[in-house]
Image 1 (cartoon, rainbow, N blue to C red):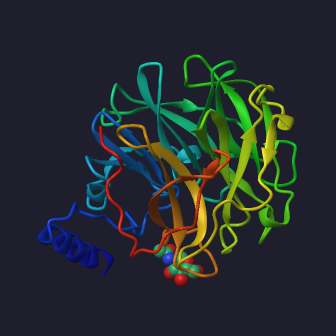
Image 2 (spheres, protein in one colour):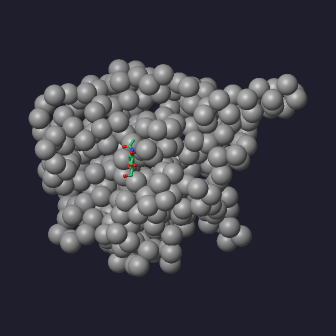
Length: 326
Ligand SMILES: *[C@@H]1O[C@H](CO)[C@@H](O)[C@H](O)[C@H]1NC(C)=O
């Protein structure tokens, strides 16, 4: 239904001689834990399939709605066959890597971080390279600093009672983690503890000269699942929790029929003048952690103090133009 309507609206725009608009969601269903990057003339979109690591590409956001997904990796190895979640593709050195979560078929206790090594574009072949963590961990994402180097962020239970945000230094080979694991955010505020206390799905945001981490707070089977924001003080060692200040409330939460808005990524427009957010939501007003979740994309705004303004999840009828071109 949604895509028929989109085809009608896009055709109408073309007849009227307008620039083709596109509409959310851009992947529905199957749009959980989305990650999106623009590079070399293509947008690449990855989301959770539970069974394998898949990637799709298109030259426009509208094109992603119908792009064919390519499976780049799956395995029957029991320790990491299943519950394949949250793949993200990152460029480090001169190579693209996919960091993702996988575990066992029996339950979620075996969830660990893994890495695939690719080539000079995200469309090259990937090969399995290794397991990054030996304790429970999900939602790997890279965090970069000029003075402190690269880190892996993830959700963990590292000497804490509730699912928290951890960081660990990324090795110079980009396929290993080194040194200690540090907890930098725990679910302590009321808006982080709905259903059950959770902090997960960290994502780096470099905005207006400041480094932020967005993350998802509260339990995904509630409509209170939302985004929180950590702001780095700009100088303190990022492994020190005191380097980060937490938003006083959710910065992005359920609206316009989109519930449980979270597990996001950020990407730049082709000319790098705009920052866009990609996230998932569900139509179920009680929230959902399953494949009903769809992928949404929208433009980030700026508050008067220069910090990011996430606004509200847009209605599906909101017409967007393509991100700003080169
Ligand atoms: C997701 O969960 C909802 C609520 O329990 C259920 O109604 C729906 O069928 C599920 N959808 C999928 C795709 O698993």
